[in-house]
Amino acid sequence: MFNLKYSFKSLYKLLFLKYRLFFNMLFFCKNVFPRWLFSVVINNYICELYVNSIYNVNVLFFLKNYTLLSFKSLVDLIVVDTPKNKDRFELIYNLLSYNYNVRLNIVVLLKELTPLYSITALFSSATWLEREVWDLFGIFFFNNTDLRRILTDYGFRGHPLRKDFPLTGYFEIYYDDVKKSITQVPVSLAQEYRNFYFRTSWKK
Figure 1: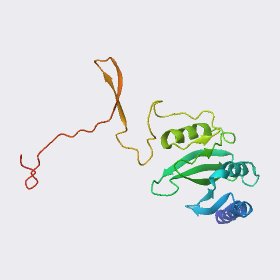
Figure 2 (figure 1 turned 45 degrees about the vertical axis):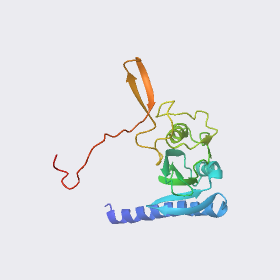
Figure 3 (figure 1 turned 30 degrees about the horizontal axis):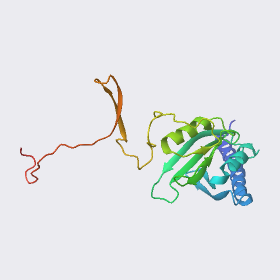
């Protein structure tokens, strides 16, 4: 007869051994490569490696090709913009290991004008992800052969997902009936002059 309690016990034991080996390897990486990694943090059951921006390609190459880790898939590229911080951008590589069924975040801290080495040679999915980051946040990637805008127009000014980008933008585009063409002009926010009587504002 199938023992459900025993099967759960064995399953937990297998999972514990599997993830213990995995996390041991990550902390081993921290000790072996002290110049590459700043810290190893486990946040909401996801491990995060804080990496020096110069060595991002080296770390990702190791994580992808080392047998006991084998993070073969780049799922997403996330950027967090905090203008008040010294390192304004927090760029996160979200990796997935099919062998271990584990996700891993590689976190790189960047200043506003700090470029980053492209990882398109390691992950083919990074080409479009890096284009999107360049378009929306303005982070430049070395060695990306196709770094151009992907969501905004070619003549668009600025990077719209930065916190200091105005909600109205810098230019507005409309069709001019007189010129019979599309016209682009700077945004002007003119407000109508009104007299307010604040004591009885509900009365006309």
